[in-house]
Image (cartoon, rainbow, N blue to C red; front, side):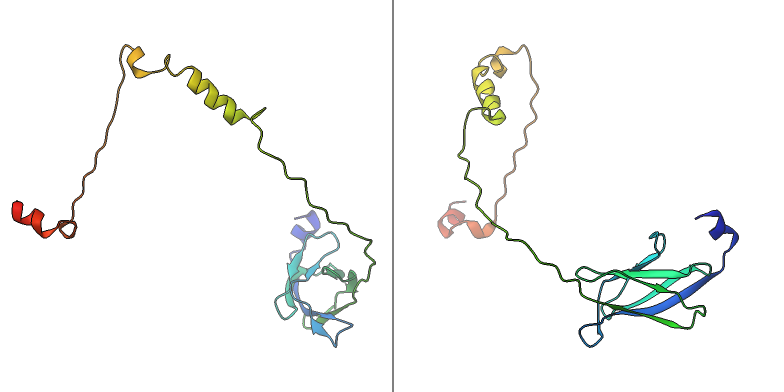
Amino acid sequence: MSQQDISNKEFKVVVGKVVDANQNNAPIPFATVSSKNAKYGVITDFDGNFSLSIPKSMTRLQASSVGYKLLELQVPIEAMDSLIFYLKTEAFQMETVEVTAKKRVRYKRKNNPSIWLVNQVIANKTKNHFSQLDSFNLKRYSKFSADITNFKDKTIKCI
């Protein structure tokens, strides 16, 4: 927070709505409403409504959304006033886009680090075999599970 905000702790809550000016005032969900420096901001809900707490000294807010022109408005003096942003669509002409498939790269052994590693392991197999070592340590875990439903009737009679 700036020195001005710390010394002037008086905030006001601005409520309002962001709507599409071209489509019968349809709400614009997830639009951004913020101060010009973007220090204070909020995203509108699904119905285009917002509620933003700003310092009383702040006089302007702006609203924007993808595909719409940025709009800046004067903040009402009274916190009870509602602020409505009427955003206009932003038309732009897209140039020709050409989409091409990337040439499929075949698998190559050359310059592949995993192939090099496997080749080194194979080349040093006899040198690294446990029989070449003076000593080694081994931890082994064996698990055996049997279920009575796995046995056949003949097996049970033999026991």
